[in-house]
Image (tube, rainbow, N blue to C red):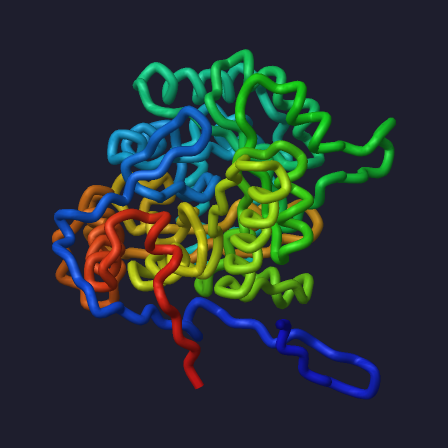
Length: 377
């Protein structure tokens, strides 16, 4: 039953919960973390860890996507980002860092200028080919507005997974000037590659997206305390614990509705450390999409800087470039698997998940979604 609160005469709001509001409650049984599996599979693609990289140029270069793929995760290239617009992305990122260190507003303007450059299909195809040739799963993100135009060339370039992602997405995207709206169900049915779509914030939208044939549904829009300003820019916020649980309920309803089709739930937002990662899985996510936590890695494209993909929006930027690390940065392997000397949980993310699962007595991710939870306060 929904917990509704009256906020004024004739107006109610739902009480919801962030990941920081909930805690995992261990059962009476524990097990060794060596007996825990963090593997998951979406469509034909199996991954050793439930970690995707948020599709921002601050994080995912072709090199980073390859390294994360070798580590067992999935790096998602931004198909409308810098890798398809500029031949020397390292140079423009270095310039961005230089500007951001003295004038954050000027850095946003510079990002907008960079994203105003035209997309070049050969550059994007080369980035896809570099990842594909390394033998890891290749994924690219496009917006609902540009999905119809960009996808054919991406499929031709050899992507394995397509991510259709906006801040908030619906099963039918209407855009002024188009002959007809983007109907995701029709769009997905015509593709030979599986599609992950998002972000969603509630049960109804998640269920609608599952009915389009998507292989996975993203909950959230990559919000992070350091860099995202969607709440102050649009007034939109997603309480991730509640949103993940709602999407998981939609997954169960859709499973019953279809007689067995399972759609994966991916949590993208407000996951800052290993504890948040574990709570996201416990709330019902099959995997998480990480941004700022992975930007700490030496291999990240931003070289110690992070900004969300919406920071370069031409008319309503919803993020800023922030410095994640100033000095020597740990390698991606240490960020994911340790060892850690940081008690805050920013290192050994997967190790933290494994230990949480083991201390709660669960051996795989699906079972861990049933763990007990408590609410603070």
